[in-house]
Image (tube, rainbow, N blue to C red):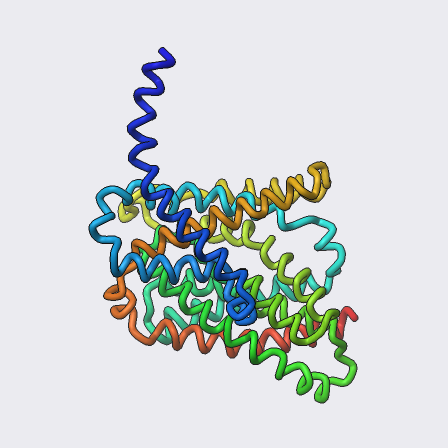
Length: 351
């Protein structure tokens, strides 16, 4: 019986292996590039670089490889993505939430919900973009950039081209934030003398898209800003799971059974993400093990990004037009102005 079981699973492994190896190679290359000082200074993390490399390969040499690699690439884009999001929970602890305080939690929650709502309003009502693209851009802008877009994709069931457009949008404006926010700090301190560096760090962490971009911007401002920015950002990342649960519930109400192409996916991986974060708060695992799990999560997410890039075509990106970029720009302005107002109000009344 054991031999029969191996015989059955072995062909499946052979089917997956070429695509998994390709995505792993792209992820490794992206990780190496992200470690280079010149690239790291731009706040370009391994996830961003993995999708860029994936898109380049997908639109050049991938076509003859696709018959051999498609199965493994699909596995990386779906199953490994969910596992990576679950393991991402090892970056969060309840202690981090306590450090940032109730005001930080309220700032993150208000910024997240208002940003997603405004993205939907501008994208769907004003720019007439399709719902999936708007929701993906909203998730990436509201929570944690490319990782949030990837985590939202299984719930929304969006096309790969729409996911790529959303990621490109949040990466572009998140990268701009790295250079703009350090310039905003002296201006903000002049206008609001009571504002200290740590408070500006919370503003940075609650409004910039990617974790790597938050670290880069906070570091340019100062150590106090960097520390509070990272804590605020990681708290915002933890809100990804309840966000996905709420989004899934909205989809269930909006999708009539007669028109549904299939059941709305319940994001079980989001619940497991919360469970992992709670378990991580107990500090039962050695720091070395947690660091290894964080590396594994980064590898799996980078492989998923590589797979997404491999299945994205330039023609699909061109078809999206300039409207997604315009939406990203409008949301970016909101994050600075509206997010700044939320920070000032909450810190004023709860400071």
